[in-house]
Length: 106
Image (cartoon, one colour):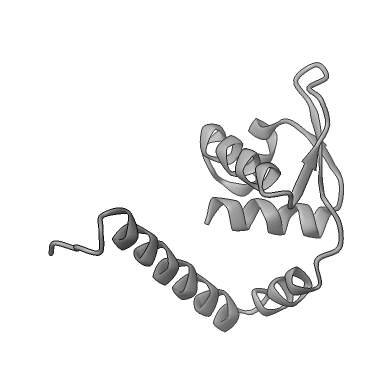
């Protein structure tokens, strides 16, 4: 969820000149969790960031992603957010099963 919130923040605010700590406070996450999320989004090519300059970085979306426009629009309402959260949870459970060889102990 941290990645989604960071992505939505950058989508809604455009280019943001801030530290990960500042963005984490705005979103309500620990700074280390947000830093990992921004690193992951950068590694995936969705987010571009500048070099560190006095503790600040420039974060922006890498480009226009039509599917992201649709997802952000869908997630604006409560029902859309609930659906998105459920889909992300299902995907995470599937990843966990694959990591553990498909065996899931209750």
